[in-house]
Image (cartoon, rainbow, N blue to C red; front, top):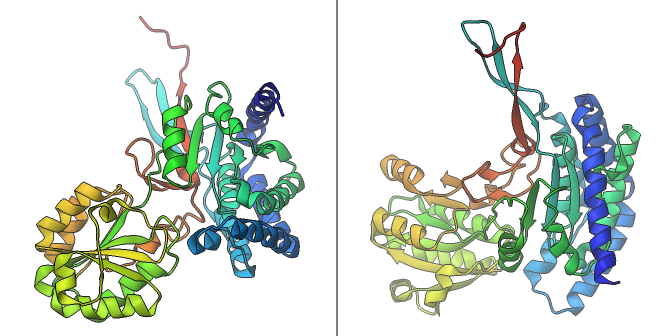
Length: 421
């Protein structure tokens, strides 16, 4: 396919999205809810077809020598399909994010003002291997009255096609345009480049994937980008942590799903408690199948640890590997996180309320937890139904981005013949 044809196809996606978004913008909440519930029903009805398509995707990805964590992100089973369908229903059940009046006031002369929530417009989501991103992004876009253009990775192409066909069926059942959610029809990387330039037709671009994808989008896009850096997340086991709780939280934070952006990549341990905590943590992590790489102080306590390298502290493993660094108290833990964290998710395990509150207050990240696993970095766990990503920037939205965060506002002003002197 020629570059001119790819450019024209992407441009037509943008034109169509801008046109149909007006229908979503004015559609009653009940119709948007109905579309999501019907989409969930269609996903369940097509589960066998989806599993068959996903099996082909996984088989081809395995031939490409992909990591086990990558294959886990790509793989679907009946539980994950049910989670996608349940996520659409959970999004449908949330309050309408549109039309809510945030503020209202009136001047002495009777001129009345109000600020009301409205859709952003057209969203473009570029993602890699996780097919469930297609369902989450589509559901949140429809709920918030935004049209969406989705570009998934080559590896998940067949799975995403089935998912979006189910979503399209839900839209049609609710009397909404099926083009409200569109997929980029070509896999050529040039299509992404053209999508990044659609300033007249796309209002927000959201990258979901690894560092190279996010960096490309942020450097090349002329469309505003919702920042989503990689998750170099830390769990800090304070000297006053409960050992049993620390083991349970750390193993879950690393090993529940090591290939997701909410996984802990570095374990920080207080020097005062390293002898009490580290042997049990290493044993539990190894039993769960995790490789443990330690600094010199950690290796002095537990023999046989792999030697951590300086680059480890800036590595998003997305795999069953964790780095361990021993720190001298809260100050050094905060310094390490400030130097190596990506502003995604950070956790402390401690029974010391003062240390916990200091950590919660001083760590600069989108999500900060006390005595809880970093794997809670998920919009569904926050009660949003799903998320379109974890925003690590500071503008517009931060943390799990749900439907309410995919809105902007406008001012409505009501007068009675007012004129400005």
